[in-house]
Image (cartoon, rainbow, N blue to C red; front, side, top):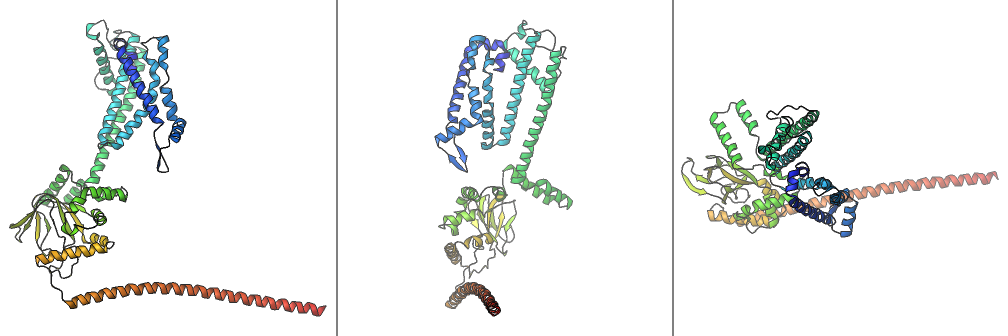
Length: 500
C-alpha cells in the first residue's frame, strides 16, 4: 500500500495485479475472522471447545474489534477518489498484531530460535528501509525531481526514468541514511532537513535495537553452551594458575574440542531438570531405553523399572588412551558403550585381548551384591578407550535405590547375575548350612520388622492410655468440685432455715 501510494507508476502499470492480490488478501482476512469464532482457549487448564462459548469470548475480545475494523469496505472510496488511490485500504494494517502473534509462536516452536530472531530483526529493518525509500521518493516528487542534488534526479533523464531504477535508487539512498554508512548530498530545504533529522533519530533507535538484539543472541548462545558443555575458560584458568604440564593441558583442550565439534552433551540430567518428571521420563526413554535394553541382566525386566533406570544413566566421554577401569578396582558402576571402541588390555597396557564396540557393556556384575562372587565386586580386567568413547554409566547406589521398589526384579537380576558368574566360573558353591544361615537371617529380619511394628502399636496404646488417664483425673476433680458445691449449698440452706 505504501509503495503503490508513493510510486504512482508502479500502481498505474500493474493495477490489475494489485487489485487481484488485494482481494485475495481480503479473503484470507475473512477466513482468519471465521477461524477466530472456532479458536479454542484454556480455562483452568482445560481446552474449551464449546462453539457458543468460543463465539462469545471472541466477540467480546479486542481482537474481534480490530479484525472487523480491518475488514471495513473502505474500497468503496474508489468510486469517489479513483481506482489509483490504494491509501484507502490503510485500515488493513490493523491486522499487524496477528502477524506479530504468528512470529512469536513460530519462535517458540522452531528448533533454531536465535537464527529466527535474527531473521525477524532483518525483516523489520528491511520493511523500515522500504517505507523510508517510499517516503523519500514522495518527498522528492513534492519538491521536484532534480531540484537539487539531495532529491531524486530528474525522471526525464533516461537513466532514472525506469520504475526499477527509481525504486532501487530510493532504497539505496534510504539505506545510506538509516545505516549512516557512506556520504549523502547535504540537504538544502527545510523539508529535507526535517526528513534527515527524523531519519537520524530512527537510525539511532534501529542501531541500538540491532546491537541489543545481536548481543542477546550471542549471550543466549553462550548461555546455551555453558549449559550443554562445561565452562572451558574456567578450567583453562585453573590449569594455568596451578601450572599444570603442557601435555595434560593439551589433553584437556582436546577433550573440550571433541565435545564442541561433535556436539556431545555431558549434562543431560541438569538440562532435563527444567521439565516435569513425566516429560523427563518420556525423553529419557526415547533416548536411552533401546541402549539399556541391550544389557543382558536387564532383559525381560519390567518396563517401569527400566524407565526408572534410564533417568539414572550418566553420559561420560573418555579420551584416547584413558582407562575406564583397571583390574582390581572396586566396581561402583557399570558402563554401556554408546559410541567408540574400548580395548580389554593386559597389565602392560599394550596387549589387547578383545575390542568392545557400540552396544557392548561391562561391569554389570559389580553393581549387584551377589554372594559367592569370587571377584568380590572388583574389576577383573583393564578397559581402555582406543579413541574418544561415549559411555553411559549406572551407579550401584542408583540401582540399589531403584530396586527397593521392585523386589521381584531384584531377585530376577540376582539370579541372572548368578547364572553369568556360574558360566564364568566366578561363583563359589554354597552348602546347605549357608542356606540355613541365610534363611535364619531372613527370619531375624522379619522378626525385627514385626518387633518394630509391635513397638509402634505399643507406643500408640501407651499414648491412648495416658490420654484416658488424664480425662479420668479431670473427671474426678470435676466430681469433687460438684460435691463441695452441693455441701456448701446444703449448709447455706440449713443456716437460712435456722434463721427463719
